[in-house]
Image 1 (spheres, one colour):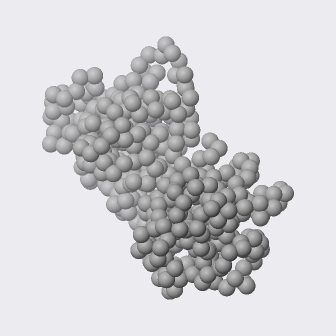
Image 2 (cartoon, helix red, strand yellow; image 1 turned 180 degrees about the vertical axis):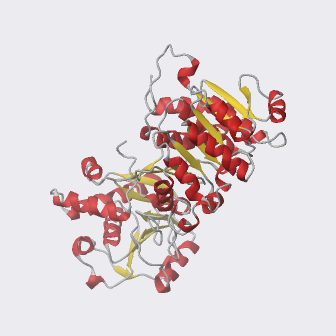
Image 3 (cartoon, one colour; image 1 turned 30 degrees about the horizontal axis):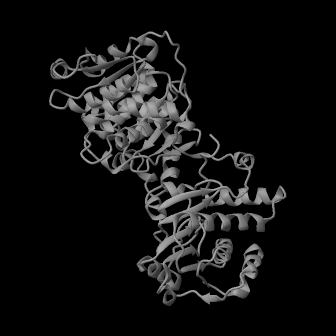
Amino acid sequence: MSGLELLTPSEMGEADRRTIESGVPGVELMENAGRAVAGAIVDNYAPCPTLVFCGPGNNGGDGFVVARLLAEAGWSVRLALFGDPQKLKGDAATMAARWTGEVLEANADLLGGAGLIVDALLGAGLDRDVSGPLGDLLTAINGSDAQIVAVDVPSGLDGATGHARGVCVKADMSVTFARAKPGHILVPGRMLCGDVVLADIGIPDEIVESLGVQTFLDDPELWIAPETAAGAHKYAHGHCVVVSGDELHTGAARLAAFGAFRAGAGLVTLAGTRDALLVHAAHVTAIMLAEAEGAQGVADVLADTRRNAVVLGPALGIGSDTRDKVGAALASGAACVLDADAISSFQGMGEALFSQIAAKPERPVVLTPHEGEFKRLFADLAGQDKPGRTRAAAARSGAVVVLKGADSVIAAQDGRAAINDNAPPSLATAGSGDVLAGIIGGLLAQGWSGFDAAAAGVWLHGAAANAFGGPGLIAEDLPGLLPEAMRAIRDLQHVD
């Protein structure tokens, strides 16, 4: 898992501090950082007139190193400082003294003729919005024709939340150090950073591990898949039930059922009214059907404990009938995925849902809201940053929470959070979320933990869409693409 940690700016600062305390001089870390940026520039761009904008802090100190090393490599370099050179302190002042060229006053008039701009103005730990003369400069940088390379993060980007703080540079490439930050992965930061290059500057893995980081990149190296014996029978792979909507709303449940089956569940059953099952029967073969009228019907289906996972919500309808079915599912002790209508039915009634989840804490429950559904269940959390509010929702609900989007965040009750970055825009299509709910349900049926099933499900969902390879994706395509995505997991986890 080493390397998957996403460090907030404060955690990165602590990693720097502990590394320096261990005997590595701060100037060495700064030299390594500047060398990494200069190296990335040389590797990715042809020599051209380059303008390095430096700020008054350590980010600016990195910029002085970049300028010096590019000039030594024969590049045409100008350096401009936003601030008073006499007020530079510490390692930044040391690096400024090593720069033998002219230090210009940073302003937009310098942009003419620059083919490449190095943005070393502001670091990742902003505590206020950027405005005034500096904001004007960032706006002018964005309006230039030059390529832009950011040191650590684009100036104006909050490295913890991915939010633009007032004006923000839009970079073509960002070079960051030791570990990526949440702001590199979260939207809109991901789009503002351009290509992210991660560089080793001498911060030991042991120091990062000592920080107790709780935020990770969603990646196959993060999860632990349960082992299944080679000769195991189908029930060893679990039995996932998907509760269907009425006969006019069956498609969403089928999408979830196919997602669960392709994710590896040994058996999958669609449960619903007789009229709904007659519709399903025309569309499925290996997926089984079970009649279930109302909440008691759901309870009866789940009384067979071999049916160990259940998905509720896709086109189930909003109201008391769905709340009762959710209650029956939660009372059964089966692992549960609550999606869509199973979430919206508890608008303003969250504590009633959470108390039912808490009644059987030993079995996993996964909530999969999009932003609108999240607000219906956690209205008071809407203003927080995405990882923070997802963590808070998980702690409050007693469930693993997947806050869906282009940057889905998966959070567990213990504070762990994973941020996903592999979801293509093509996933914004009707029914896509139903397939995701089914994938997670299928993994839960196989004995995955709630957090691992949710994180792996989100990643598989994105990998399947990427396997499609272009526009035209519809939700019905996704289950058939899951085997290729699952093979990719085996490759990435180095499974024979």
